[in-house]
Length: 179
Image 1 (cartoon, rainbow, N blue to C red):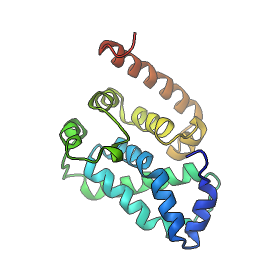
Image 2: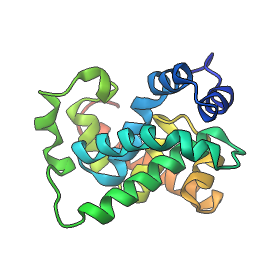
Image 3: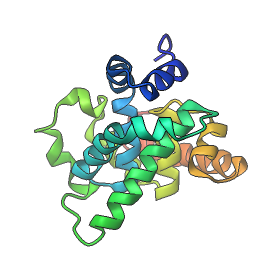
């Protein structure tokens, strides 16, 4: 994602460039999926949210003033997730606890190389911590961009992130992955 210029890509997408949309998909589908999964906690719904985001991204980019492309992109994903959750709130298909079963049938490149331990580790976090960690690590957003995306104060993101890292470290130490 380093050589990829997200700002230029989103501007090209707004002008209708299919190649720019493909480049955006190739570079951001995995972090967007991880973030969506942290919100909806359901593999199928997370895929749906990301697909809906790409379907709607052209119109969103045309009608939005975009100051920070990464924050904007993940805010669109969050909006799609919340929209899906409102529609599906009573029909949860496969909760994140059962995600390990999905791993055997899913394309591993779509899961960004997560292991079952990594998914279990994220379960030890509360919803906001999981979203913050996902945005910072998979989405490669700064803590300030994460605060902007989630519409919460920077200091809250900073403290929640630090606390989440301590929880994750403890989880991995207990499993013998770190000493």
